[in-house]
Amino acid sequence: MKRNFCFVLTFAMILITCNNPNKDVEENPYEGAWELTYSKWVFPDTIYEITQFVNPSVKLLTKKHWAFVRLSEMNEVYAGTGEYTFDSATYTENIKLHYNTSVAGNSFGYKSSIEGDLWKISIITMLDSVQVEGTETWKRIIE
Image (cartoon, rainbow, N blue to C red; front, side, top):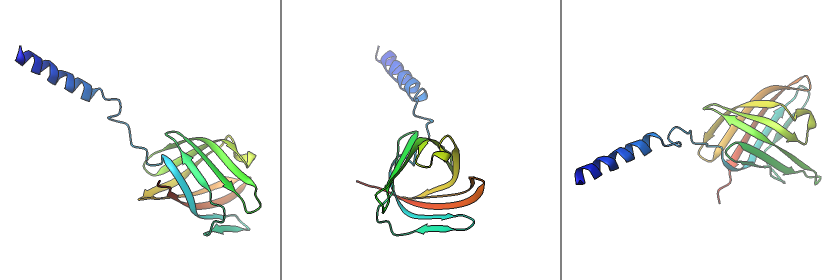
């Protein structure tokens, strides 16, 4: 009887371990709250580089959704939201709503790396028929 119980218990543990739905799920390093600490966007005729933020941008990421909000120096609210995907070196935003309505409905893939509490992204893309290069650094907000 004891031997049967041990066998059934061992078999049950193997079955549960093998069928664990979380076993193969990749950990999501993006999930959480982030604050923008550096931003540089290069357009053909203008460079926007920000290192000191009077009104910081905050980006919140769940398992598959992102949203950001920023209050400008002129008290204008900039915001956007959508879903995202990622792999080892690429973070892609699928934009559903955005203050710049011309980008809503588009997807943008960024080269991406996370080291400690810093998340660095960069992109070269076309916006309104113009090539734009962007680099941003985000710092994880830890409570």
